[in-house]
Every structure is written in C-alpha cells, then in structure tokens.
Image (cartoon, rainbow, N blue to C red; front, side):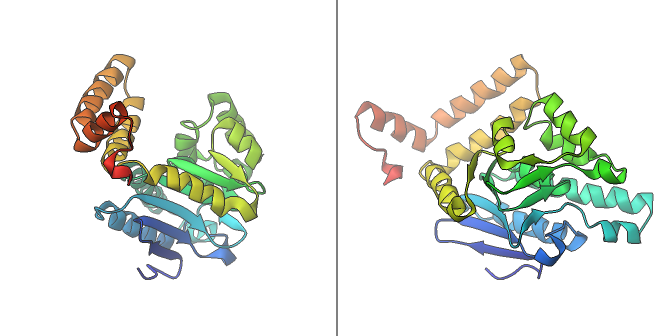
Length: 261
C-alpha cells in the first residue's frame, strides 16, 4: 500500500498488520486537518479489510504526536471551525474503538495533548523508556477536554485530574504504573517488545478478538446488570463460533487447536 498523504504512511504486512505511521516529524506529527483526514481514511480501509488482524499506530521522528496544529487553529478563530475540528478528531478516536481488530500505539517519543489522547484511545500501547506523556493544554489556557475522555478511562480519576489541571508530564514508567501503556522498553528494544505483543494477539482467532473487543467497550458504558447481560450474550455467541468449538475440543483432547497451526 502506498502513502496516503505526505503526512501519513500506511503499510500492510503479510500477516494482516496495518501500520499507520505519522510522518511529519518537523512539526512533531501534529494532528493537522490533513493528518486527521488521512487517519480517518486509513482506518476506514482497515475496517473494510476482512483479513486485517491488527493496527500499529507509530510515528517518525523524536515526537510521537504533539497534539493539534495550534497555528492552524489560530488561523481560523471561529467557534464553528473549532467545533468542526474537534468533531473531526473525535470521529477518528471513535473509529479506532470501532475497528474489529486491536490497535496498538508504538510511542517512541513525546505524546502530548491530543497526542496523549491518541495513545489513550488505542486498545494497547508500548512505549520507549524515554517517552513522555502530558495533557498540557492548560498551560496555554485550554483545558484538554477531549483528551480527558479516553485518559479518564485509562487511569484513575485523581491521577487524570492532576495531569489535566497541572499540565505536568509523566514518564513512560509512570505511564506504565498508571495504566496508560502496557509495556515499556528501551528504544532499541521497542520493536521487539511490539513484535512480542503482536505475536500473542495474532496467535488468537480473529473472530473471537473482534467480538471481545466490541463487548469490552460496550459493557464499560452500562450498569453492572446490563453489562453482565451483554457479556453473557457475547460469550454465548462466541462459544457457538467454530473457532471456539475447535479450541475447547482441542483443550479437552490435550492438543493445539487447528487454527493455531
């Protein structure tokens, strides 16, 4: 697959892993209008790829993503424009959650404001030990309201509020301890760490992962009783799938399931 725009490189390997690489390092990979549009297009392509297995969201340069393009925002100081811009960004975030495959952020550097939001919105994240994270819009008088949505669903409430109210950054190790990222490695070992996580995911049946991801997010937004009802229905449907029938049978017969070969 070729480059979607000069700001986004979209590749797909033979395993069905789509890698979306933010490629505007001179501007710290900001979420410009064109970058958001390119991401939306790429995510739509993945959604329509029935053989897709995972998405890796990566970036070139020292920064992962420095948030929105502030120069672009200042150029059109109109409420309607800002509403459209943040709606466009929210659409991208919702598309990440709606994908039937896991989305993993590969964070090699700074992730701030909407860039931190992007990390929090992904299903999983691996980070270099030199990466830093912040929602520091408050430093310029702009509370990071939209980044607070996935951030508060990743880390404890008071820790999220502290980051949002102070604008202070946290290290990769702090992000790991708080639940914002899953694994931390040196920059040299980051790709091996990512590969290990991908291998564990790709060894599982796509249908079960898709069903499980959809249920995971749906049940989080409901009350306990409704969550159990949704989860029970999902497990029943999952158990009826051929991959689950084969997996359970293989377990009882003390052998590897056919789909693992």
